[in-house]
Length: 550
Ligand code: PEP
Ligand code: MG
Image 1 (tube, rainbow, N blue to C red):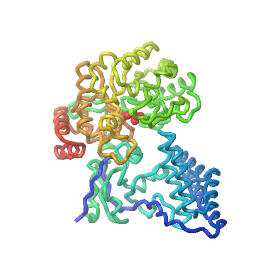
Image 2: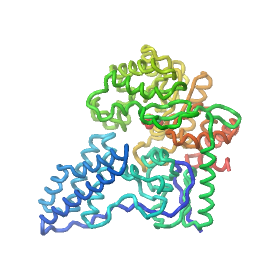
Image 3: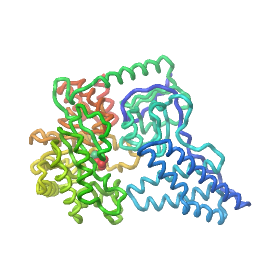
Image 4: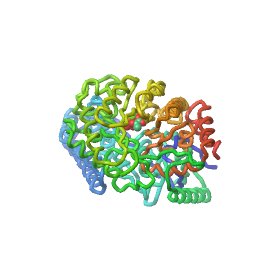
C-alpha cells in the first residue's frame, strides 16, 4: 500500500517518477583541537575556493536571472573579508568547519539586521556555508542531485541557487517539507510549469528511487506506488497537458461569463517572447524592480523609457501599473528608510509618499508620458492603501497627471472591509492576496513555517474577497486579483463565483486557469464559492471543493 503524504498544492499538474532527495546540509561534528593551524587554514581556504569555483561554473552554464544569482553567490564565496574572518578564527583555535560556520553566521546576522530584501539574502549565505563546510569535511557538496534520469525532487526547502538552475526537462515535480504558497519554491514551480507540493511533512523520509505520484492541485503525494499506478498518472498528466495546450480564447465560464485573464510582470523583458494571444493585458506591473539596488531614484526620462518599452507590447487591452511598492520585503536603498521593529507594519507602499511625495509625482508623470504613446488602456494603482482618504488623495494625484483610471490594491483588511467606500473614490480595486493573507491571518509571508495560514484558501480571506467583489458589482466597477491566488486553477472557479472579474498571474499559470474556468457555469462557480466559504480552514475548503468537483 502506498504511503499518502499531504501538503499544500501550489503549482498544478500531475507527475509520477522516482524520488531524488536534495543532499542535506552536512552535519557539523564536535569542535576539534587544532594542532596544525596552517593545515587548517589551507583546508578552509580550499573549501572557499572550491565553492567559489563550483558556483562560477554553474553561473557560466546558466542564463538570465539564474546566471546573476549564481554569479553573486560565487562572489560571496570568494569575498576576501569572509576569508580573513575564517583565518582569524582558526588563529584563535577554531577548526576549519567551525571557523567557516561562525564566520558565515556573523555575516548572516549582519544581513538579517539590515532587514527586508537583504535579510532574505541571508538564506543564500547559509547555502554557501553548507557547500564550503561539506568540502572542508570531505563530503559531497549539497545541492540538487543528478541521478541520471528524470526525478521528483524532494527537499526541505529550496535555496535560490538550487532553484535557479533546475532543469525542467529533468525535474518532474517539486516536493518540499517546508515553504508556503508564496515561497520561492512555489513561485519558481509555477513559472516553470512544474507540479509542486510544499509544506509536506514526512517527504524527506521517502527513500531515494521510491516511485511517487505528485498532485500539485490537491497537495497529495503517494509514495511507493506500483508501475501501473505511475503509468496511469503519467497518462493523465499527458492528456491534461494536451488539453491545456489546446485551450484558447478569453477567460470565461462554460456559459460565457467573462473573467479577464491577465499577466503579472516586473519589466518589459518579461513580455518579450510571451505568447500574448488571448491575454487581456497586464494586471500587475510591479514597477519597483526599476528602483531595486539603486542609490538614487531613476529619473523621469529613464522611467518613461522603461514604461514605454512595456506598453509597446500592447496595442489593445489594459495595463495596470502599480506605483512604487517599497519597504518590508522590498527595501529600497535610495529611500534611506529608518530601521523599523516591524517593517511589514511600517512605512511601506503608498505610505512612503507621506514624506517623499516627489517620488510618486515623478513616477505618475512618467507613466502619463509613456501612456501617451500607446493605444492600450493604462490604469494606475497604489499598493498598501489603508483608508478611504488615502485612496481619494491617490486617485486625485493620478488624475492630476492626466491619467484617467485610478485604483488601489486591497492588501490590508481595513481596506477590504471598506471596499464600498473606496469605490466611491476610485475606478477599480485589485486584491493583493499575498499581503492580504499575511495581514488577515497575522502570518509573516516570509515565514515558511506558517504556510497553512498564508494559504489563499483560508475562508477568512475568501470572505474578504467576497465583500470586495460584491462592492464592485454594486458599483459597476472592476475588482480583480493579482496575488498568487489568481494562478490556482482549482481556486479560479471559486473566485469567479465570489464575483471576481479579473485574474492576473504569471503567464505559465494562465492556460490551466483558462481551462478550469471553462469547465463550470457561473452558477456552479457560485456553488463552489459557497462550499469553500462554509468550512473551517484552508485545508477543509480545498478538500470540500475537490470533493464537490469530482
Ligand atoms: C500581493 O501582495 O498580493 C501582491 C500582488 O503584491 P506583492 O506580492 O508584490 O507584494
Ligand atoms: Mg503586496
